[in-house]
Length: 316
Length: 316
Image 1 (spheres, rainbow over the protein chains, first blue to last red):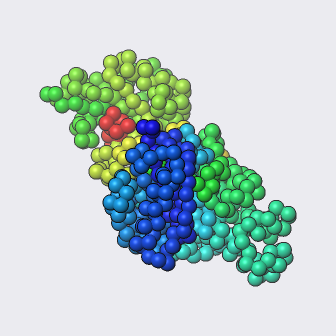
Image 2: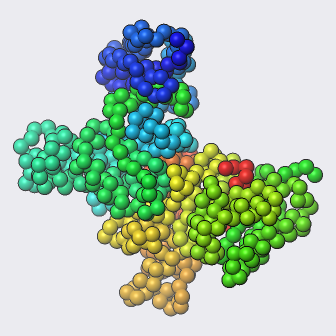
Image 3: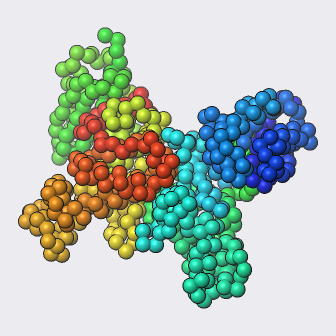
């Protein structure tokens, strides 16, 4: 048993997911436990260590085979220094997680933010398998992004490459302010939060829609209503898809990727979203840049974070 | 005299410019002669060979020191195969220029398109000297672009990365069709052609502007009028700057570059353009992505093509 294995840790606000990957990006074993954010940093680190050791114990592999431990964190990270700058949902700030985990586990550790590791996971073992250059969007509460160049996460000058949710795509007259302080960011219209806001606005305006009967509208409610022909819901879905498609078109002339991978909760809407995104993309992208390019749903779902975190060792 | 030198060829529709660079990207000697497009491909190749040999003969270097010859071509190129796919201004199509020049010169040859080599030139020996990651815009008849990642030209999946002039940035209601067939491309508003078109439209509409007195309006006329307070001209300049600034903001969240370099004829307008571009960029770019980022005019002018072509050997 000399095969090397890589452990990926997906550190979120509710759960810590830990998985074992082989060198081909296949997820072989997983373990999941609570983060216990309320108990503070020491407990969080205890939990990570415990789950990492447990997933190996429960597998046919042994600790010596572990070549490295990667972690994806929902928050701002300093990849080079291995520091969590700020992870509001996990309650960590200026936290030297790499050093702490390396001491506890006696294994090399690498970290990156959740959008980047999810992108790497999809590129390594998911919808982008075998593809060197791809761009991933994660449509969730916000809109995250990750750029994969030559099979690796592209960080940019200060580690902020791939902040795709903050591309300003909505024209001024229709734009609202984003959490980042700027106007018209993609995140304001194509995230779950954006879709819910547009639905609530429509109901408050008195638009005729079955969404008026729903308490606490979710993005799924909006897609479900659109699928059965609710015109207001369909207008909202098309607006989310329109600006996502325009953003893809903008990225395409910059990076000329082979594949766009769209993941996150909102992407589960399926064809009603993807058909419109592909149509808008085709409308705004020069033909030669469209040639051979694919727009695909993510395939790893919630496993992308674990796979990508494990991949930090082979592909960064 | 064992120092290696690199020869850069800037192949344009009117002139062929040939320069010698050292390994630091300094342009040491140049020669310029007519392309003679009307005499056909054989003469063009004869001229390239002649000028390349001449520039070395006229320099203190000898032929043995030439480590490689790079060429930048105004047109579509297949970098990997060394083929000019289509260069309308040079009258060449499906032309195996690399193979032909390698046989004639008995030196290794590399090619790329003019926007990419200009970007590499600025990154290597111009405004981006010492910078690994930068993005260059060339504002001329069209809008060209080049992406430099880790000091090298980034090609993308099919060699079309950095087609920045074809980012659709103008909202539908104001958009016009671009030469590429799509609506609202940056090139329709921020190129010399776009600026001239907006000026001619204003004059035709009867807007009160001193441009009405100018025959065959140039982009320089528009900038000159704007500088002395012509409101119509200023509106046009601000519109060109607005969409350029928005495009920079979009690229910034994708690539997080350290420097944007703006070159080409239109960039000579100076502060009246750059101040507005910087202001719009700041308006639409999240603060963390702005931090440390600079927007600079190109410094090599018409030499960028020669320098970048020579750089193809050290930086590709």
